[in-house]
Length: 289
Image (cartoon, rainbow, N blue to C red):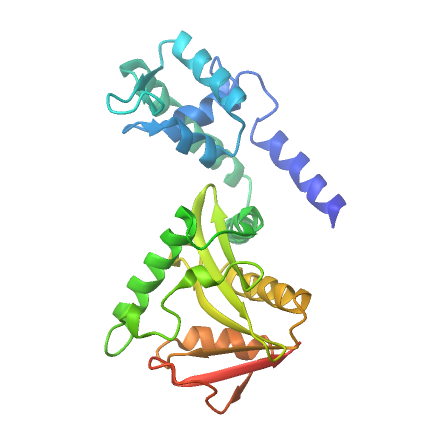
């Protein structure tokens, strides 16, 4: 598998011209061209730009300085916070970005041109699948404090979504677990999934006294659904449960969350009799680890 990925990487970098110092026959390498494209016509916060490109701050600073030297980019500090910097394209930079866009279209067309219609369809479908899987491999999952900014962002999105989906809405204080801060070691664990610095999923556990772990607050952003992140979060939570000594994972869910029930059943959970009085639950599940 490793060799196939390396072969694919070599083919792609050569075919798209990433090895050339003058990408798309312009006067700059691919790294500078990509930064121009990512900044876009509306500008971009430098920290967000670094997270989006997944490069270290030193390398990004060198790229920006080179583009500033060519009169293509201006980096400005925020009036309210001097630590916040925003990169914006100059008039010349906007024109260069339009040229790069046009030549990128020409490169894509040149890749498709020698192929039959059937081959084009296969290539584009394969590229879409590869893109989805590469995004999935970029997501980072880590244990974090449920009171932290990333966790709170996930929980706000989760509560807003179930508030819309549940038949009678959702009131946090009515839930059996109104304080997510309880899901911290040694009493529990809370996982947050991030993609390019953005929080895109979460899930937590409480370790109970009866050799079981209670799973709560499983959520995946709609922007990354279909990438297998729910299954990955669930598997990592089960690992933490087993590491804590739990033999069983238990959870409950609302009947409107059909995709969640499908995930749990596919992962080996079986429906059981109610084991608590969660007011928003219609189905209760457990799995022997």
